Image 1 (cartoon, helix red, strand yellow):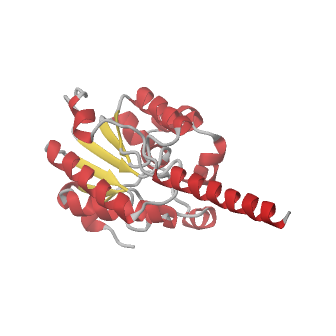
Image 2 (cartoon, one colour):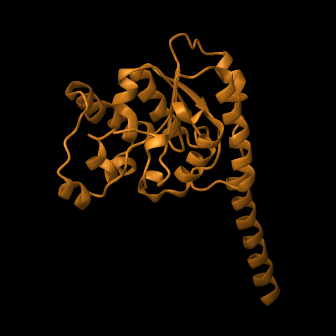
Length: 224
């Protein structure tokens, strides 16, 4: 009886290890970055937004996407079908393009970061981009993956054309600052009433207080 229990226990451990390896090391079968770009008509698409997760583009740049043409590069797109579909709906509404990189949602391995760097270099060299925007050095709300993406983007793209998402404030800080939005009121309504609603409420509810603020900062002017 003890031997059977041991065998069951060992089998359970093996299954758990297999699941962990499968979840964290399996990569989606995506087209190479250059292939994705080659398939796009990039006429009048001269700006790039690099994000870590679906919803980052809407929270920190939804009105900008509605205002202009962007190629949105998402590091963790390709691993979660429902979130991918939400992002695709957002970009269909805003008229922007999407490049999927296919890396984990919750953390990047060191090997992932090397591959992300390589892919972002391809994008940086693909076209003479007018503007690049990405996460700020604080990772907005201190998100590790955001910080990792920012470091790579800052390293591979021209800094004179690089912008960071604006500073993140919690609700109490924001109330004390008594900030007012500078965004177009009609576009902000579209962001709040349409773009945000493509995502699961639990994904975005933490950030509702930041929806009216997209005060991007030039890389050379950033102060933590």
